[in-house]
Length: 311
Ligand SMILES: Cc1cc2nc3c(=O)[nH]c(=O)nc-3n(C[C@H](O)[C@H](O)[C@H](O)COP(=O)(O)OP(=O)(O)OC[C@H]3O[C@@H](n4cnc5c(N)ncnc54)[C@H](O)[C@@H]3O)c2cc1C
Image (cartoon, rainbow, N blue to C red; front, side):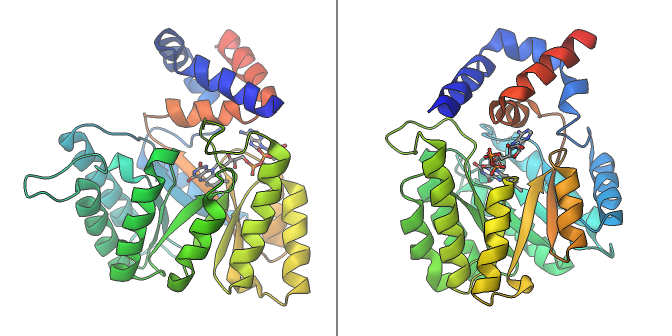
């Protein structure tokens, strides 16, 4: 409950336009702990640096909840440029996108969902260069549409090219996971990062942690590829025990973490022979992402204040 109060306080303050303006002007040096840089070259450099430690990268161009067609198409072009930059690279090519960034809320002149039009362009290119695209999960009003769109895209492009994310904090998620089983999808399991009402999301962290374990175990047991995306060491240790107990091979799952968080653990797991990927956000539109990272951990507020006072 305390966690939820802290998270709503931070995300509530972050939503204030005056706070946003101060943090946007003075907070970049602090945000760089979580964001790889301004442009694609910075992000590719970060991927290559992680590769030296045996950790793979997931490129994420920051930006979400886009309201104009022009902006959505610009984001889609920039994501296509990521594919061009990755084409021919010797390491795994992996990109995360948000459907709201490429037009999920918009309809084209011919009546199609712009997010789907752009997603198909991106996935066609991804398939061509052998890249994997993860559809991030956003706030709860988008879950139905995102899952329906994922189903459509997975049937067109295959689950080797596209996957999505399920959030353990939503009461609905165990049912959503079971309902996707026929696709044998590659799912990333996360706890959930948005400020959600108690009517849809569990307010207590202990319940979310328990739901996280149930979801991960169910997905693994069903024989599906699972991206265990958490920095929670007790969960990671439990997953390691679970896979041994159930004879689940290392090729059926991986660990995922965020850029700038628990790099020591990322390296250690990679050394132990697990597939590890770090989510590498980059770009100018870092404010919403940064606010969610601060809301996850009380110590981060002090880190921000200290950094901004220094800057
Ligand atoms: C690869 C990846 C992709 C994600 N994609 C999505 C998505 O599509 N949709 C979505 O809603 N959420 C997404 N998330 C965020 C996720 O929902 C959680 O908010 C976030 O991962 C924190 O939860 P945790 O599992 O690490 O556990 P927690 O219990 O929150 O944290 C466990 C420990 O991890 C460390 N830690 C966690 N967060 C931070 C932080 N911000 N700063 C410093 N240390 C920290 C601390 O040591 C903490 O004690 C993603 C997370 C990852 C790793």
